[in-house]
Length: 629
Image 1: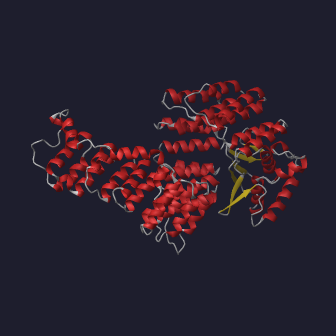
Image 2: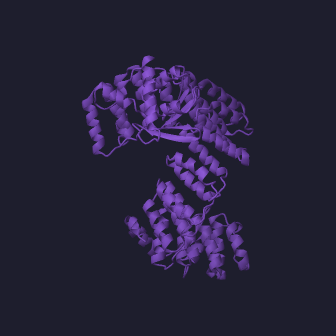
Image 3: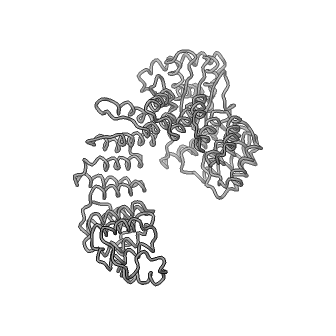
């Protein structure tokens, strides 16, 4: 196994650790006893040795280092330390929480003449659960190469835990190979841990390969795969597994954890119909009374733009905690009900529930959407002064949005520019730049771009921001320079992707999509919609197209944006008057925003688009964001 090569820089340190002369344990204990009062002694010096059967409960009850040393002294005097069962229990107690003294544990381990795999596993687990999980990998190589201990499935599970902690995918693949060579491929628990490693490292295909090779799959295994897809932005695949796992050939019953994971996936996709199916299943199985699932339902309905259902679940929850209130407050805020969100915050305080950082994110966002500058500043101070909550990047982003909406750009810049304790993300600066554009503050906009380049120069989104800035000014030479810079550095932007759910099936679209089975109908419908909207006054905003081309070419490029294709499919596939819900992974452009506004009036449809920044509820030619996003 080649794990050692990966950690070659520490090999010398490891060898020195393994060959260091151990401190004689009796001398170490004598030094400790000389500084320990008799009242602290669990085992008096002259007391008889405890029977071997009493030692393990005594070891497991030990909670302090002083008592551990006293037990160790008695084991040495009574020669019980050579009993493998007792020495393994003692080593586990020393290596694991709450004591977790791995240095001392290693000294004890080095004095065991012929350590067994159980002794080795005690140390492996200690390292895996410590702040230095990479040490487990080094120790594993030592135990195989120098001690001749092969390891067992538990050894592999501790190695996988270590690799997962540090996202060490190549090391995990080597463990995978060792599992196969050692004949443990029928151990479902071990293979489930292996799936978890691939999932945490973003390798969904690797996780699915392990899943397919498993001889037996229980609900936990299915949940790991669902979680893998949900965590890695493959929510559509996660939802598909809900039906697959219940097929007769699999016969696996989803549990409460399955429901929680699926609700999160539904929230990501704005898949309301599927979310309602999961809700019905949870209610049928009795899972829906659990508080964590009810909180997830509030969040899911809110993120699908269905606030009435979110509020119904919230109101029907008898024992609301801070997560319940925060989910409802955030749901109201993100859907444009700022004043109602602030009222909910007041009701939360009256109910005696203490807010946390997530609560204040929702409250500050609500103030921003409602233009309540004074209240927002008061809540910001309340959060820090009354509740002792340190402001994070999200809080500063809300404050920049609040002040920027009010035209207080210099004050917003001063707030974030002097902040040193928090590493502000690019979203905060991008929010300020958007305010600069709206209010025509070009000079401040240049300063903000400088901060973006300085702080987040390697993120594709910031280069796109520069492209937008230069393209809006018609400076195509600068646009070309930035594009060349991105190409030279290998920086790629995320493609725009929109999803919509029709009759419980999630449909996904990208720009110029030609993969949908109904693509011909969709493009015909889109042409018809464009004709109707132009009669109503719609003019494509070509400033949204960043490539250098003539006006007609720009209009053609804009006409095939992913959210327009999703809207056209929604009009084509649903009866008149039905709400169209769309989720997009990026910020919606100005042209698509205008398109959706006019369409909502011409076709008399409520169109709800959740982009990366916020919700847009388009109704009768207006948007809930008041054209600021």
